[in-house]
Image 1: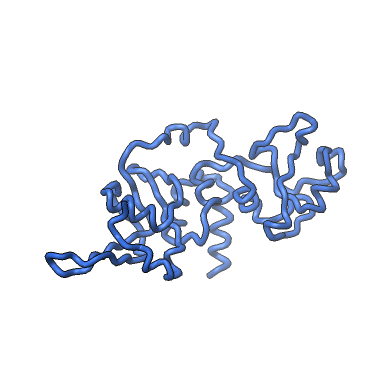
Image 2: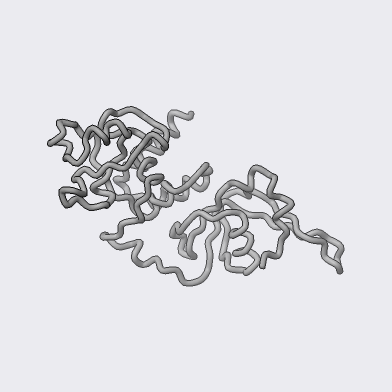
Length: 214
């Protein structure tokens, strides 16, 4: 049960900002909303906080002191407790595959025609088609516009006479957390980057985008 009345604050636009949750060692775990962040803080499951304060929640009035409860929520919360995360460090680990994360991995580009599209105009293409014993894994899928996907049909790129513009890769867990994020703040991004592999393609992309922004 939440110790703060968050309903009154729901109209504030900053409450849509996601909080990055990590384990106590600093391993990124997931994105959580403001309600889950408040629950963790009230249950005293937060070991420490990092980053700037992204919102302040006000609760009820204390009957003894007459003061209103106030809770600051930081951009990154490191939580106590046991988490099933050992597999995240395995070389064979592969995060869950979703179209949203796939499209973001490929920058919303069709990897056949090279054009950028909205999510609704994209699809998941299997390089080695399912009909030819291909499997639904990160290493065998790319983002494709619906036109290119329909043209390729149940063929490999070679069989369809189509050139694949980039080689697909399997993101690490930290990279997957990045791919799942919405409106990632600078301090959250800096934290995630420290967990990206040295040769991460996403690391180079993020740095390039930051340089362009400046």
